[in-house]
Length: 179
Image (cartoon, rainbow, N blue to C red; front, side, top):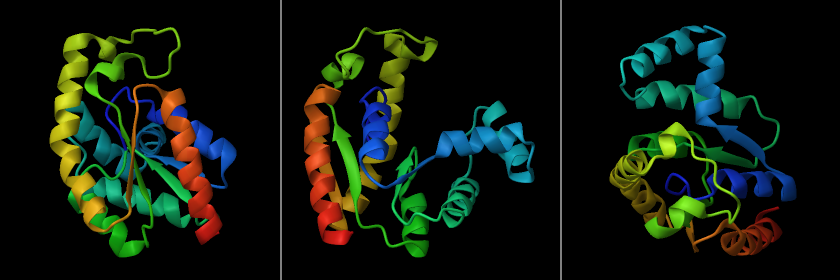
């Protein structure tokens, strides 16, 4: 987990490259179901096109289907869970043993990789601010949920290259203990 622009994608790709985990992105799953015009994809599309959030139950069912199809029991979820309800539903089906959060301060959001920035339409300052506020509002309870279960590991830093070594050490220790 981490705010928009915190380097989650970069860190995720490094985790997948360095550890035996399957990468599961809720956005990719939704887009694939919409593109394939599955019944769940058509349902999700109605919400997205009307500017609404896809209901927890629908997103959770898509994620759980994807997880059930994996042969690897170690997975990295991107974009899920976003609500406590989603976290509870996931925990009811799977033993969640580790949650990672990139705690990048707001002033570090715009350039966490240290690389040249390419500004997308949704990276304009006012849009980024709105996304950050939405993230903080929705994600704080999810972080608390995992913190209370004593499985949340938080990594503070302003750049991906500052955060990655900490994440890597944490995961090396985790996999030494849990296999």
